[in-house]
Amino acid sequence: MTLHRSLLAASLIATAAVVSVPSAHAADTLGGNPVPGVCMLSREAVFAQAKVGQAASERLGQLAQQARTQLDDQRKPLDTDLQNFQQKAPSLSEAQRKQQGEALQQRMQAYQTQAGELNQRIQLTRAKAMQRIGQEAEPIVASVYKSHQCGLLLDRDSVLGGNMANDLTGEVVQGLDRKITTLSFNLEPLPAAQGK
Image 1 (cartoon, one colour):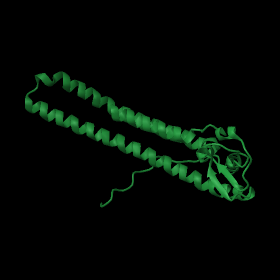
Image 2 (cartoon, rainbow, N blue to C red; image 1 turned 90 degrees about the horizontal axis):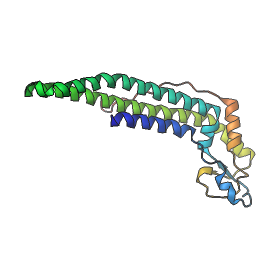
Image 3 (tube, helix red, strand yellow; image 1 turned 120 degrees about the vertical axis):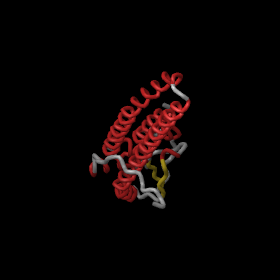
Image 4 (cartoon, rainbow, N blue to C red; image 1 turned 45 degrees about the horizontal axis):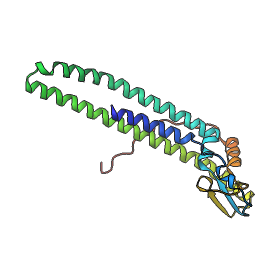
């Protein structure tokens, strides 16, 4: 049951990572003068605020829910068989207990392997969706960077304080929304095992 819960938690974390929005302009409270040529961008906020990022997050949530449902459907008969085995174990011979116990253990290991594989597939799918959004955003970032005459681009989420006059995030989100609003994808397959 712990592995099933860890898959659920990982799925939720993966989904939440797409939509988490850092406290916008938290660094703006210190103010100060804008530094010419120094611009900032919050990649996380772009992914969270752009329509395509929201669509990707929603799709990842659907895929994670499908994976949880699939695992639940497989876990229920396994749990029933485990309970039945525990109830009748005292009346079985040692050989029968060993044989049935080993069979149940193999089924549990197969279930845990599948849960781990589904978790990996969700993570791969998330990474590929984020990569695709990043590729779509790249020329927009370059254009906005050039139009603001930036000489240096910093990660806004890593800045402790300062003037946010040259924060490109909003313009990049708008540009991305004009370019793409949705993304279609399914669970990625696991990469082929090495050496096969």
